Amino acid sequence: MTLRIVGAGITHRGTVRSNNQDCIAVGFWLSQETLEAARAFEHELDLPFACIVCDGMGGHNDGERASLLVAKSLVRRIVTLGLSGIESSVRAVNAELFALVREQTELAGMGSTAVGIAAHGTKLVVFNVGDSRAYKVGERGLMQLSTDDTPVPSWKLGSGQERSTKLLQCFGGRTTFTDIVPNVVREPCTPDSTYLLCCDGLYETLTEEEMAALIGADLKASAEALLRAALKKNARDNVTVALVRVSS
Figure (cartoon, rainbow, N blue to C red):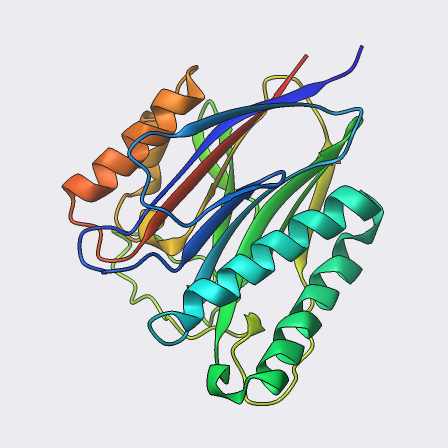
């Protein structure tokens, strides 16, 4: 029996920003458009699958370019090379971004975070660089699988703790080449396991309890509900959500 992935993704500029520096990639589909409806997807795991959420940084358009390059290149490498090369793929994409900046010096300083899920056969990998997050959805709520590359890595909305926006590592974002080491979690593909990928525009706006309460059986409706809730609370940043479920 071949397992499969089902899910949905949506991205939006939020209520304040004039452009969307986030990028979502599901397989070879990518979007930086402000979406009003989530895109549903399904993928048989006899072939490698990848879902990536990126949050760009830089000037008005530079962040968009950085997140698009990172998302597109990561998906291409993962689908081609499989799960065994996740770490090398991440580091290679970082080098690609720095190479672009060397060629176009006006882009100096642009960068991106990334969080992703890759799956193939019976194996699944969650990885991230920066502060975009991956959660596993459980009966008791959300369990964060990613590691924030920030001075306060376990920050939660409503904790009373000040959130640091300083990134200890990201794709690009520096004046000289800096290598990165992705945070990686490997686990088996277990049917009915559900994962949430998001940028900080979501978890800075909704608590983990609020997010968990909006995730149900219908992942497309759940992704749209998460976005609506964030917009209702006047999300100041771009908001991107991907929900991924292993299915038999």
